[in-house]
Image 1 (tube, helix red, strand yellow):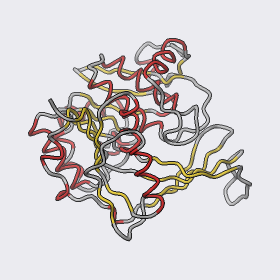
Image 2: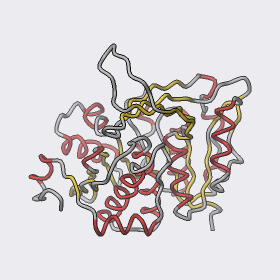
Image 3: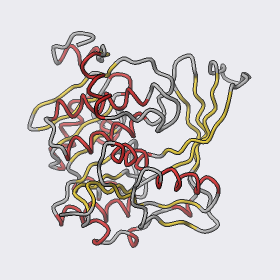
Length: 319
């Protein structure tokens, strides 16, 4: 039996959250209410979500040896995630972001920086680091490393989930070995040149033969294609304080759902619920919920559908 349920390879970041009563107009000024350090990052936050849902988790990535790096490592250790293959880079600052949170809406603006000294290379990814897991979750940033990891996983019969937000050079070497793609809402059209999101997802899935090709839609939920049909899951309506990390939590929850062999429609609803609950707290990992809390939200909360998809799928608002 594999030692870990899920292995995540990719980004982490230590954010500085700046809370604003309302975002100022361009070139304007505004007082902020508070600032705080908050660990985050695409794959790291997804892995924390998996760990809090009870999965055995390993994280592979790089961190700097500065204060932000120490904060990140401590936050991951506290969740029980295995960090034995994390590389601490000497004289290198950890990835950071300044996140401006508009408290009137919960929406955020992100200013980020990642030094090249944090780049994860293909040489760091070996078969022994991958073979100990049941599922591999990747982002797309360090393309060579991700292509190597995905190829190893495919050879070993380990399913691969992927979170990608934009096009990276050489990314065509990653997609052929992905089983579950859930991208940003912009990526499918950027990659294919097809404006219609349904046609774009169909094109990607047919070209690369993945089981699921989909995208998150922010405040409107998620859309995926599998088995020749589309599944649309509207978002749950909550009192939103901060949207930071919602997509990362969605991906962690989706990894959990795949391993639990949830039906796809239920997996999307569950992942949407986990993402929505995270938005009710401040920080990328501030509101990661329990399985019971997500189930409770799924049973009672109203939902917000995207109108054009609503009409295509015969949905009614709040269904």
